[in-house]
Length: 284
View 1 (cartoon, rainbow, N blue to C red):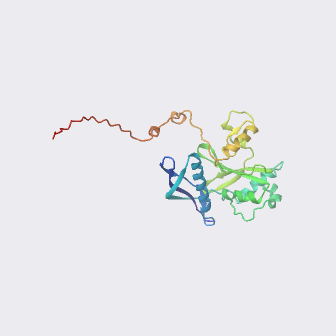
View 2: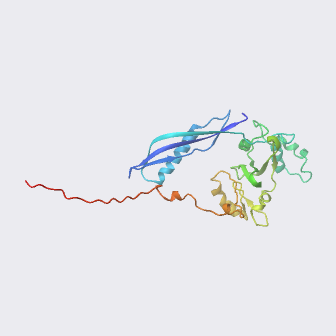
């Protein structure tokens, strides 16, 4: 795997017309983000299917729209360094020990690695490279069908950000991991024993809460969480930031783009005064 990967976004510009009024519209669609490295190239078929689905969805909102031509394509490629576990401690298999500590929790001396050594071969880690990158967690889940894993990391202003949210909700063992960022680009996986305590400051509820893995919002009961998840999982994992109540600019919502209220930026009305002079007619 290359030390750096690339993220690509393909944005086409289309021109469509309506059969009814023959009006032209300039449309812009954006494909999903794809990770590209030395082992994975851009999936053009996936891009085409994604853009086609967006165009069909837009057509369903109107009547008789026809895409005439593609005006241009914009391909955005951004270099980034994937976040992954590193050499924060002596062992690069901190991911494995964190998962085993969640599944095989001893009654005493839970911090001793010797308690989890007997279960080391119970996990299928063939083909995985350690320290494990968060984007390789889905591969670990495919090889270990009884375990689902979520990975969080620290965000801005002492907040938390979901890096990987498992799509498997009904497996016997679910593990929440936290990726700690250390000095000199070193990272370390640890097991999150109680997610409700981690987000305790987001609610005034004094008892255990049920936390959504996508937005990290705590709920008082599991039924409310179950009703919330189908709507929340439609979107990528997100970080929720609350406005500062002491800052009026953050806690007050104000509409600024006043020009968007009008169809045209300028509307000019002209009134012309004129008069007619009688033409001289010569009788013959």
